[in-house]
Image (cartoon, rainbow, N blue to C red; front, side):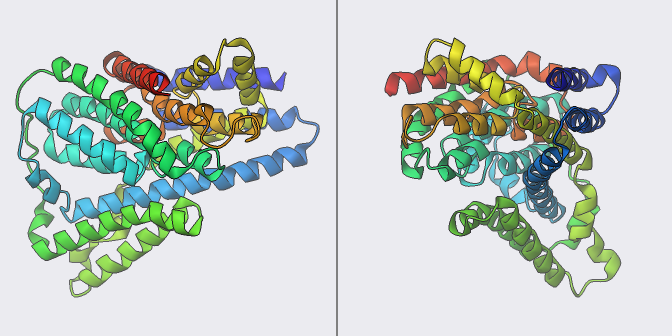
Length: 423
């Protein structure tokens, strides 16, 4: 009974989120209600309430890590932006041709995502497009392609996507092999939708964003360059710190934020308090989108309830039993990751099959990394990158469904076909 109620809550919550612009209730509010209700139902119908309490504590440890990571990354990006640091990139990108700019932004996102991760890269690249493009709908389309590029770029790197990292840590894949095997399918996953998008977007020049920021006069070129390069180095430092120490990524992100905080305090120490206020971390923290963070919290709470109650693993087992072969099963799991978070899906599959069944670097694990890493692009709320872009640009679910979903789906299937034919 509890599993039926939790599933109903999830479906109703999902429908309310996708129709946010019609019902006029913020998606963060819906996600929080759905997430907390799912756990409430779970514990009320459970005979071992202590185990449920223990389970939510374990999940909250993981969820809080994601939220702290998100807060840290968004704050560092806001800090760079407050110092006009992204002007360094926007002045280098001289083209204002829509089609050329679309390719430049997408390719930068693809390779940067492999170095950073898809979530941080999305935050950085959406912030850059805000500096380049004034028209909201143009920005939405660019943000949609950034989501596709960030997820495709993250899939072939052990540091680029959380699910690839999970498989790497679990010894299901090795770093060198996953790069070698997935870079071509992931690139095809980007190139196919980008080629079609080139003809979809109307030729023309993007509208420039006028910089009416009065504080620009208070920033010297040295301060701008210092904060930009220090901030980018801090973000690039995160995956390497995680690799070296094996600590969760949010630890590295908080360290990076602390160092950036200290640096900006030193840079502006001689200024009056009113003058240095707009350039402080305290100001940046007030500017980050709190509703996006709360939306993440609600969604992850709801998904964790589905996972702890056994609903997810039952769905995964059903797919494994009823689909004809490995490739079909993994393709469907990848598409399911557009609806349900890919992390618990991968965790469920990891728990079902040991390395004795599918050894390290087996076709099964590599294809799973590709499918769950890129399949989330099919819907705007199917990946961390999509949810972040949705929050930052206020993209509606149905606009993305109408304009971007089929591009992401074509890319996903094309890359999958390339991988199957190759291996």
